[in-house]
Structures are given as structure tokens and as C-alpha cells.
Image (tube, rainbow, N blue to C red):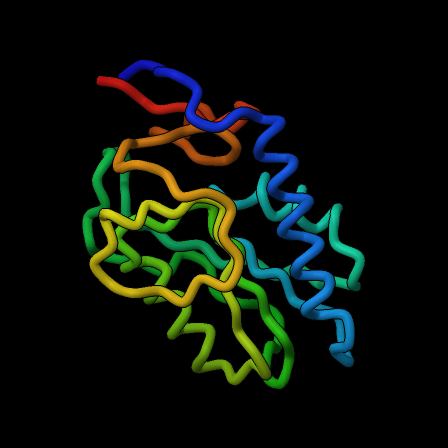
Length: 174
């Protein structure tokens, strides 16, 4: 596998992150407690960090981690929870932050898992949406970009733990 063409530039990502943060800040301006940002490890860390820096509302962070890819480029379809919530989210407003939604299986699993903990509200913010691969519907409240059906890396997304540090999103080629 080798790094292919740039799909979304770092500048375009940062502009979209600021726009999403403005929408989120407006929507959560009057909540009584800090918004809980719930990045899904490891891929969404870059996105969630930049997003949090542009928010104007107070936030708390918690993290969840799952595995569904292994070291390949196709989801296995089996979702395994690797790290669970550590905060009590009952009665709190939670914004799950995902790097990419592909089939929707992982996100759907996590959404239902968090919902069982009784948050006041649970919404989803995703950087990249690969709609044509969707198997399970997911309720996206905030979306960065729609992308084609290609394996992408950069800005937190990896292939076998490589390329997360790139500022842009690239297509990975065989």
C-alpha cells in the first residue's frame, strides 16, 4: 500500500472544523453542564482536539475505543469494545466524535452502547461520511465531508497505525 492523491486539504479540513464548531457551539449554548465530547479512539483524536479548540462552550472529554478493522482495509463486521466510558454520562449532553463512517456498523454499535447509559442527549459529529458503503443507518447531526468509496488515511485515520499524522486526507493505493 502506498500514499495516493490528496482528497481533502489540511486547509479545507480546518475551515470545515471551524464551521462545525460554530454550529455545535450555537446548538449547545444553553445546556446546564459542560458538553461531553466523546471521541472514538484512535482515529478521531486529531479531529476532536481541533474541534474542541474552536468550540465556545465548556466541554468535558471521555473516550471510547473499538476495533473492527484489524490491520486490513475492510471492516471485519465484528465490533469489539476496547475502552468503555469512564464518566457518568447519565443526564448529560454527549457529542460522539467519529473520524469516518463507512458501513455504520461500528458507529451504530457505539451509539446504542452509549444510549444505554442514559444521556440527556446523544448526537454524532463525523468528519468523513462514506454514504455509499452504508449498511446500517446512523443519525449524523454534524458532518464534515462526504467522500467516495476509497480507503483514506491522514488527519487521524490510519492504515496499520501509519499516516495518522498527516494534515490532509489522502487516498491509499495498493
